[in-house]
Amino acid sequence: MTAVLPCIIVKTKERSDGTAGAKSWHRQDAPLLLRGPIKNRGCCVNRRFNPGFWAVVAVIVLAALLAPPAGTAPSLAADEFVPGEVLVKFRPGTPGAEVAAAHRQAGGEPREVIPGINVQVVRVPPGRERAAVEAYRRNPNVEFAEVNGFYSAIQSSWTPNDPRYPQQWQYPKIQAPEAWAVVTGTAQVAIAVLDTGIDQSHEDLQVKIARNVNFTTSKTVDDKYGHGTHVAGSAAAATNNGLGVAGTCPNCVLYNVKVLDDSGSGSWSAIANGIVWAANSGAKVINMSLGGSTGSSTVEDAVNYAWGKGVVLVAAAGNSGSSSPSYPAYYSNVIAVAATDQNDNKASFSNYGSWVDIAAPGVSILSTAPDHSNRIWGFGVRYGTLSGTSMASPHVAGVAGLVWSTGACTTNSCVRSRIENGADKIAGTGTYWSSGRLNAYNAVMGLTGS
Image 1: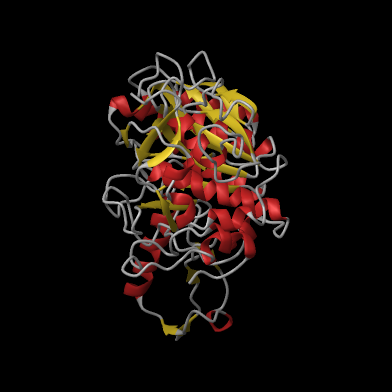
Image 2: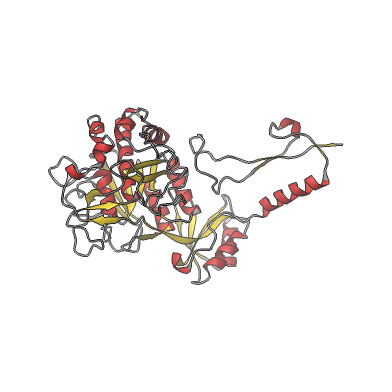
């Protein structure tokens, strides 16, 4: 006899705008099971009844049904996550009584809810984090559970340097002066810098900071580390003011979103909170010169939330010199940025691969630096040079600000397409990233890179 079989369709990864994504499989890409006669399903063919075949199908379906809710496997070392905290997201519509019961069973006490994505930061007994995560994952009402891991500033090398704009080699390379002849940005476009804070008294930054917020345990929004101040200057330092350096988007404003503490490290919950806050506060661009080798469902949810709010998200691809993914750059709704040098070569330290979207200058980048005595990094006063994908990322964020400022785009997918399509194709780098090296003028004008 001829059997009518169910049709199993594997859903391919798509970006939120419906276009095919280059980055592979994420948590939300669960297999989709459609029921119905095979003759009505174009992906399937009629088969004669075969007990062995049905056994295989049963195993596949059972495995899918019994798979625990997605989340980061609790394999991080004890010093790689916040002690006494886990992150839990319940499925929409879960009754409050069942949520409370799940917390009791896992020994958890909810501390806060990250708005917009409804992820709970839950307090558990120190040392019981992994056990609590597993307990939550066994509950069918839980969408995902994970430890509250850390991401860190993408570390960079530095050398002291005095010069100002003439030494900012990156701007002629990406045709920024040509772009500035068209648009220099607008105060209606805010670039949120999620980092270690921004020096509040810096001569090239203090007039650019529109808002400050702190999601760390540090007592100040100021930058006591040095990383965030340098990143902020590359994105949008005050320009044409007779002082210091130029920024990529001269007239854009900055949101100082401190998600990394004074040692350069931040929890996933802090970073997710920062992303959601920036999206809800009207930022048009979010720069994340931070990351780690482990994915977080909480951070990915925050990224997707911000993308859904129309924000362009940009992140450093990492400095391990490998093709290994770095998160959050790896997520499909983030522009992942590699680093190039003065000769358009891939920087030796830069991560690369098909998951990386674009490259930008990131070697010996002169920018702003903290001007207080207790800064950790040994910059010269006010300015210094750094190398890293952290330095490449804010140039892309700044160009996103320029594109928004033209008014030519009304969606984040349009801005992203202009940036990626306008990138210059550099010979010999085609396998390192999916686009090319950033070209500000092409992005602003909507031109295709050469």
